Image (cartoon, rainbow, N blue to C red):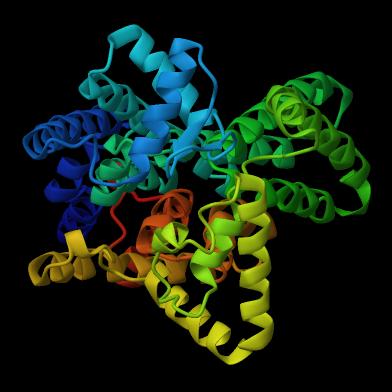
Length: 447
């Protein structure tokens, strides 16, 4: 017997030392610890910076949320008064202000505690990405193995933009975990068997999915159109044998959504005497993206124009919506060119905001973001025939991209929508690793 062949075979079967080293870190608990730690560190740094500058946060939107949170905490009228004496009773939906009000009730007006609470929500998002990826891709968990869901969780934990989004005093911090919970709930419903044994559990999941979907809409009204789209996709994608079961489940999701949103609808009916589903801000947002001076970026200075500001919020909203539609009708060419600019801004590999623009930051951001785009494309190609995975993982990204071809656009609006797609980025990384023939054996295996 040739002992040299036996020796070579044994050497080949032995995991490479560097792969055994990386396999030690294949732990969801460890990833969650790092995800939370990075977000706590970011919260501390951002709090120091804002205290130094004497501002609440680096984005102006924060002020609206902070004012409304104070109104809720103090039990006063839910309104923002601008330009002297013009009240806005539905300028923002109450989801994020309710969260801020709860934080301020518990911890006072110290913004650091709010950021730390949001850091915890960011860590929760990492766990939800793992759960969503496992369901949507059908990946079984394995001990000490870098599976696709675990890689997706790690990417979410360490992504610098996801980390930053968690600690800004903006609605994205609360919207992301609610969006992920909504998608995860649908992934469970979509993949669960329809037998009697699991039917009652499916009812619970459907109601929970509706509750989280409604809460997500109350935080970010732009999510409102995606919910019916994903339910329709579930029904259509269930096939002839299961579409009736999917339809019943979708109706239960709607019931859960209505339970969450009904108090806001009732309140708005009392204020306006009509049905107002989310906020009265569509006209301003639409005109922001579609007007003769539009550049693709958000610029709300037109609200100070005497042509618009003397009106109450409903009249102003209707006027701005009409002007935006007139612009589209009268200047279709410029509307199309604006859409191209907005598309480029949405997919920009570096920040759009002037306050964040610098050559070193742009280079570093591009070096990080462009490879992610490439891996996402590979993951998309791999799952091109998997309708369920496409809806759940890249559906939000496509949806928000399409939405911001109409409204003002920025890289900022891509970041929350990109979180579910980390599963496809992880899948792309796995395919690249395999294509180079460096598949790590045993415990170091990716996938």
